Image (tube, rainbow, N blue to C red):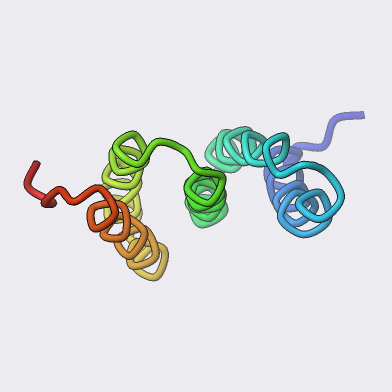
Length: 112
């Protein structure tokens, strides 16, 4: 039987499961991409806060796994714009901090 709010439930429960249990038990490389699915589910359910947190978990996880910094900078810029659009101020500051770390590590300026 399908619940009418299955996407909201899936995104919330999966975010907690992936973020707490799976990251400890399974290889992080297999868990991080799951956060993009959680993002999609949360957006379908209208849970903007959950969606942005899932995006943050994906971006920060990919950053810590050693993803290419120029690519990560682009993800962070897009994520900052989205967090501004949905008025997610706290998460925006976390994205900005990670973005500035990428900029610093690559030796580029934020204007490039």
